[in-house]
Image 1 (tube, rainbow, N blue to C red):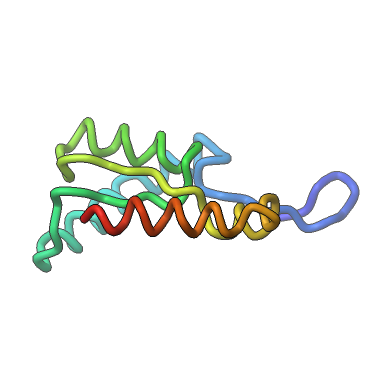
Image 2 (tube, rainbow, N blue to C red):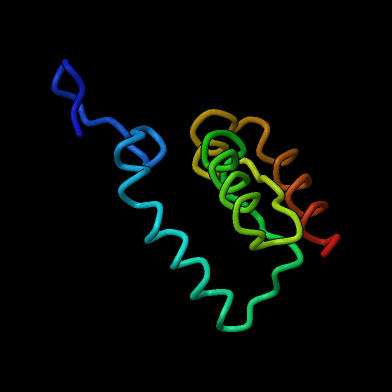
Length: 100
């Protein structure tokens, strides 16, 4: 996807309500398929603490897929915008993940 200046821009499923609606059933079925393979459902770690997390939280609320959903800042976000704080993010990730 390009912006009005002709530059490539990042585009995610949650950037368009129409795309999100079109993909919803597929995404739900995909998660259910993974669960049917025997994955643990006591906790789900979500890569992304913004729109992706809010979507997954709502999906989980509507379908009771996981006992809880825990957001983690997306590694790409950390690398791109917070690289100077990388050690703090790594420590935070290790702390959160080691609790499970």
